[in-house]
Length: 123
Image (cartoon, rainbow, N blue to C red; front, side, top):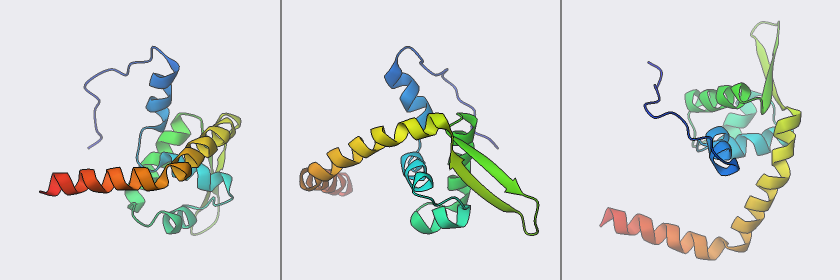
């Protein structure tokens, strides 16, 4: 059964729109890896082993619906599928790069906070 959204999306500003198209644990990584040349679902799965194939496929489908990636299906047996970024998807790469840089620059601090929060939840 598909998840039915109870609350309509809030699309009042740019941040609302960004969260609408990038919400999902793996979407930013999927966009990054597709940009790096990993186009087959099996290659993406190997790069993101923590994600189930089903979840990756769902998030790839959402990225496709939001016109950030395109999916090409080759008429061979077994079917071969490749993803690539659209022009709109490509414009996100510098933004993702800056986010990654911020994460790298604050790595120790962020890791400490995240681990402390996890520890607090488990106590």
